[in-house]
Image (cartoon, rainbow, N blue to C red; front, top):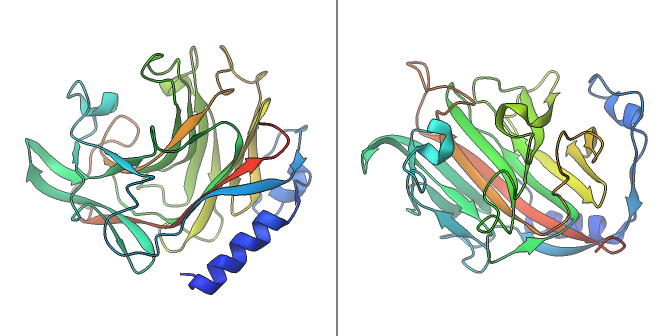
Length: 288
């Protein structure tokens, strides 16, 4: 983990530099991923507008983070048949030693067999366009489903998927070398989401920290792992309306079970914890 001095130097370096995206194929050559023949790249400067560094032990910053509680508004596992009950207890979500910890536990609670936490910035921090990133070490195990993602801020008026969803990082605990970056919208949601997988070679996402991020502008969402561009989605790629032209809010959670990952099995070890070193958001000075 970074010291405070190193973290501040990192923030200053990123916020002051002009971010230049190199060609798609060159960036991906380090990881050996398959690529498309043509990709649009972008160049712009950014201003740091949110820096959650988790330097204060205890509960997460209440001026930025709220919580989803329970098993979903319809009691259906948040629409995905997930098995956990989300809480705001320190057993499931706390800040310690400069890191936000989200812990999934196997325990009977309010009729569920597991507990965990889901944090969100709805009504507290919402932004259109920019760079959104987090430095995270992921958990591991069959049925463990962590995510760092975003939803359209108008979701109360335009229920999912009409509001739009951007999955910056989604991960199956039983596949510790793979993550996905996706968008969901009207006509391209759930199993029909526009998505691409990133494979980490000679390493695992549960053994160290990695930076997951997007660069988002009016006509594109670019997906990164450790600043390596591996996917770009544009209006031409989606099979319905492009709904990524308005403010979105951030969510971070660890689900247990559900249609995406399946249920835990006898080899799944609990508790499982996702460690978040920081969450940072930059504003694009030329696209707002």
